[in-house]
Image (cartoon, rainbow, N blue to C red):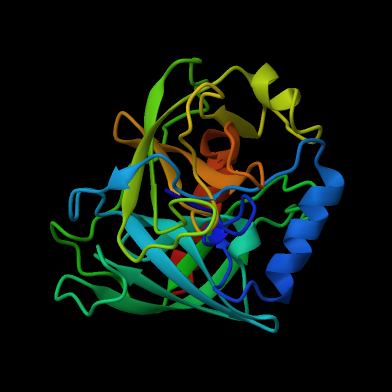
Length: 272
């Protein structure tokens, strides 16, 4: 699979454009300077082409900012809301849902502009803590077998190390190769210590450590903002990782943010 930013972000983000615009370069520099072992997660490494429309919650995000164009992943959590990473923000965002090959105009696709961009108020771009963002769609999606929300956890339950989950995205498939076709990969949840050893800013209350260091499988550039789905429930959001795509990578822990997610969606529904 690919990474985070544009290609999964370049690092561990989910943005990133083919030209690695200024914002992406800045993110990479921040990670290189701040992280002990380096960071970068954005594409799917060691995965495979997903079965078409087997992840109907997946969203491809086209992001415009003052630094240029970039891409991220995201996922539908209600007919009118997408969840993604806060580092995938921009001045305007368009979402494509129901896609398999994002370079084609597939009849299953729904292209919807984002009406409101709502990053977590405590997001810290230096540490990547609280790396979570809600996107209120300008129009509701038409729910069908190609486009439908994924379930969120009901409480802040801890994922046990060894749990096998799935990540998906349009990020890079290796350090130099992009893809327009959705990829997925199965990844194992790791102990928090695995990420504490690699990333000094890792916080187990807010983040999940994912991907066995003994396997060449991970998210990478362009995969940022995509979900970690365990037993059909979205438990994590691709945040960051090593610049060389070596696992593990760090995912934002959705369960820790359930009150904010619920209150935000409720508030904006009342404004309709």
